[in-house]
Image (cartoon, rainbow, N blue to C red; front, side):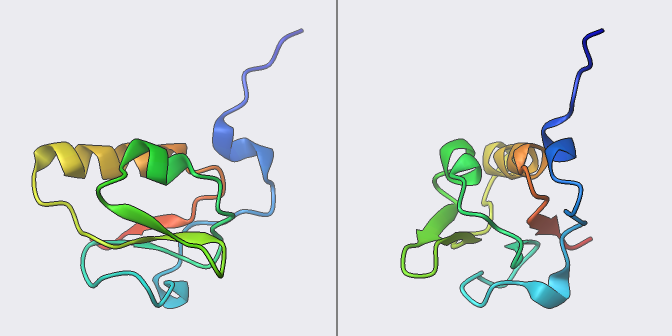
Length: 91
């Protein structure tokens, strides 16, 4: 029997992004990356205009908040694709 597994299901210890654990490099605004980031490249591949890698500490962060619908859509896609649910959105 084949089972379809969501990308987020592979890590049972993951939890929802926590704004209290936002990485200090995130610019202020609606989106952020928290300390669960595993430096997987997914968000940087999806939205390279909004995410950067902190090379020394090996994680990604939001360096620019979205400025248009396309960028906002890409941030939403990055949230859905993040394997450890490290990208959050303040509502």
